[in-house]
Length: 326
Image: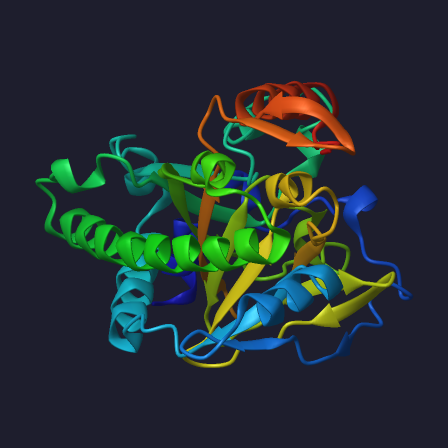
């Protein structure tokens, strides 16, 4: 892909010159991250106690021997790269079901606010674009376009693998936390599962260093596959650590819902993504939530449903541009 073709694939408002985003710059102190090996969980040999230890200490771990075919990862990343390299106008003209294109913000409700000039969002655009893919019903949909149809089929297959992993991991967590099955069965609902395929653009100015600023996920469990560009960082004990890409591994992290379910025994881990000056970065995230009306009960929180939490989060995003969380 030539440089001019690449630039034409970027959303127009994300092309250089880009106004630096002052409130999300990294300070020199923040930028002093270090590498630290995450806990490694062997999916074929792990115990609920081992998973529980990683969830308490880090809220994130690296999964090996997960039985997701590496060839599937390669195909999915290849087709995603081909689609991202299409012109912005083509991507923006795609049907919005079942694969929704977004840009400028990881929050779907805010994506597209790029076209508005009023604060606070105009100067808080992130150098990213992506596809939001609710997995429910994706198997029943078919595209006429061969590239989009190939993308849909790969996403459908990949989502089935991720749901298999999420259910097994959550079962081990519930066992470690002594959550009865009568409750845990509604705390993780595969019907809510969503894939997000992100492309982080190249860093274009001295000021803009973050593709996504520090945040926690709202999910029960998130499962990430990243390419070899790197940039993911996780916070632990007020320090930032690089999560290095390692081939044929997945990164599992806990979200706000899992912290609530565990009564704060487990950590909804704060993480962020640094931009790369030379390369775009593609990552594929799987996010799964409780059933919409499942009541989450733990002594540290008043009883609440995911639906209530989601509505509160959306309200915070609209008013503040970020979520407050639990």
